[in-house]
Image (tube, rainbow, N blue to C red; front, side, top):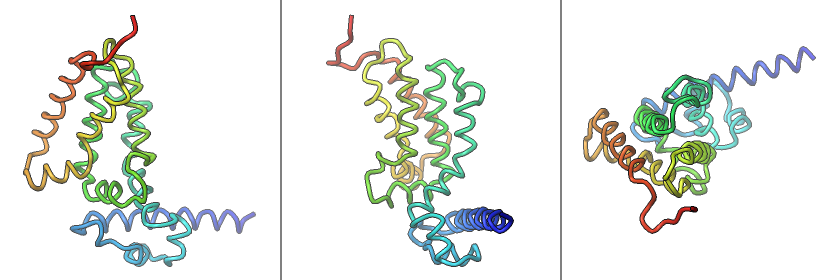
Length: 203
């Protein structure tokens, strides 16, 4: 029993060391592709075998690091006060949720870009995307007169994709606060538009 507890503590300590090392490397390097599993293992002081056993592959490591950075926002969304928390009115919560996603992407541009571009399957199948989409769709369904919440949630989240954020901040050089204001204005207009043209509603 003591050996098992010690082994578990070692695994937790190694995982934290790997995430800390990966976090630092992705922050410093210009391109996410410059960071290899060997780099992370060396920086964390663990063997590559330990790294692969803990995270599976590079995509698994990226997901774990992404989730670790996202944890404060997740807590605010699930149990925090308005406007992010569940008690907020939907017209206030939708813009707040999208602003939180945008700010997270701005603060974690390289990691978010690596995660969205590096997966072997569609980014829309990723757990973190499905979680945001499900939450946003559920809140949108609370807004009277707004139809097709599923598509609307996809369309709104598209405005926060990491590749778009990277382009707007890099090529277009749009300042952070201007981008946030533009997104807020876009979301407000979508929510105020009512039913989509050509859509039907039940009487």
